[in-house]
Structures are given as C-alpha cells and as structure tokens.
Image (cartoon, rainbow, N blue to C red; front, side, top):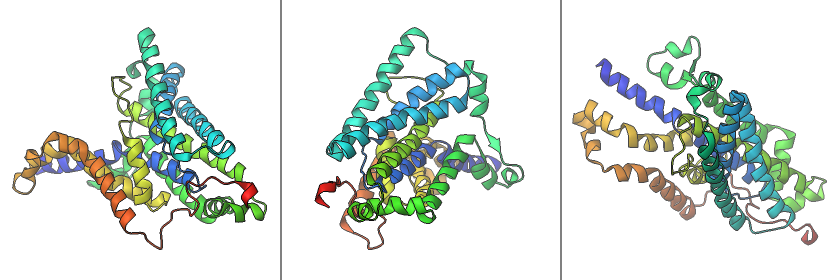
Length: 331
C-alpha cells in the first residue's frame, strides 16, 4: 500500500515540478495581452531567457544572477516586439512568429557555440544546485501526501505561484493595472483621458516577456542543463498561449490551468507506473502508445482552442482590442 501511495504522490508532485514553466509562460502572455498586444513569440522568448540565464548564471555560480539575466534577456525580446508592433505598427501575428524563430535560433547558436568551447555543467556549480534544491515549508510539508505535493518544491516553483497571484492582484485592484486593462480594451478612450498608451504597452510587453524568460530558465535547470538537439522549451510556449484562453486571461486561474494541462503532460512519464500500481483500474494506461502521450498536451491545446472559438462567453476576459494596432491619428 505504501508503494502505491508513493507512486501517486510522486505523480502529483511531478505535475507541478515539470509543468510550472507553463505558469510562467501563461502569466507572462496574459500580462502582454492585457495591454492589447498578441505575442505569439512565447516559445522563442522563453528559449532566449533559458540559454542566457543558464550559461551566465552558471558562470557567476548564482541562481539569482541566472534569474535576473533570464528576465532581462527575455525582456529584450519583448522590447524588440514592442518596437516593431507598437512604434512601427508591424503585424503582431507575424512579428510574434518571427520572435519565436529568432529566439530558437539564438538558443542553438549560443548554446552550440558555448558547448564547442566549454559547456557549464550544472553539477560543477554548487550554488546553482543548492539554489534549485527543494525547500520544504515547515509544518505544511509534513502533511500526508499533500505536504510533499504542494509544499516541498524548489524556490522557482514558489516564485511562479507568487508572481501569478501578484499579477492577478495587480491587474484587478491597482490603479496602474486598471489603466493597463483600459489600454487593452479601448486604447483610444484610454488615450483621450491622458493615459500614455505607448508607455503602458512597452512596459508590460517587456514585463510579460521577462516573466516568460524565468520559466525558460527553470526548464534549463530542470533538465540539468544538458544541451541536446532539441530546445529545452519543447513546445511549452505554444501550450502557454492556449492556456491563456483556458485561464480566461486571469493569472490566478492560470495556476489551475497549469495543473490541468500538467496532469496530461505528466501521464507521458508516469502512466506506466500508475498502470503497474493499479492494474485493475488503470492497467489500460500501459497499452497507450508513447507517441499518444507525447501528443496529448497538444491535442488538449487544440481542443481548448476549438471549444473557445465555437463558444464565445460574455464573461470572457479577452481584451477587446487584442491584436489590433493602435493608430493615434485615427482616434
């Protein structure tokens, strides 16, 4: 019985451990979209934050340096996006896809270049390893099952949840957050009452991109910094775009969305173990092809997009001016 309980506990724990980058990507994209900008460059932005945060964080032997540089380099991607779409009025969809292509190119160019010289192995940097170790919350982490699942994680997991809750409060209850939402709903009206639309867009596009970068850095650390032929982000950026819709543009509800999507994503690794532990009820999981497990998160993503396209809710949190460039001269 203890073995079965351990398998279930590990499965639930891994849902959070391996999928918290989705929360960073989703909250970052919500922050950007609340300004009325649609950035499809999440994948590339996370990749840039991941590679620079990891390499420079290791060289400095400091996870704090890694987090800051992941944030700043990803924010720079946001700045590029803002210059092109806010100042130069470029098409947002095309620009976002360009950022993804650009970010992935930077990831492999920098990563392979450094690897050819001397790749910084995470095991050689004790401050990085110790900084990414689990920090059990006293008392709460001792609760059976739920203690390990919810209160025994590394600091970046806690930081992701804190950022999501802070951004929810910021958008809902602060004066600046309410102004940002007005920019996303009706930039002309916001402009007419003295709100600097361009400034709000620039700042929040960069802020949201920076948050994405921290999620990318987390993925690099979670994969022990091993650089292979595939990008560390591995499609999480695209899932995050769909999660924005699933979360109804709410950073707090993005936490729930991360867990739901994470459940299906974690089945890819833990499905056979669950089938072996509970053959009577979950034995069928062993017969599911591994390829289906790999595709499942993206299938769920597609279903969410289809469902939200068919059924438009009156209570949708989608900004009315999302994806539309604002020409002040036409106000």
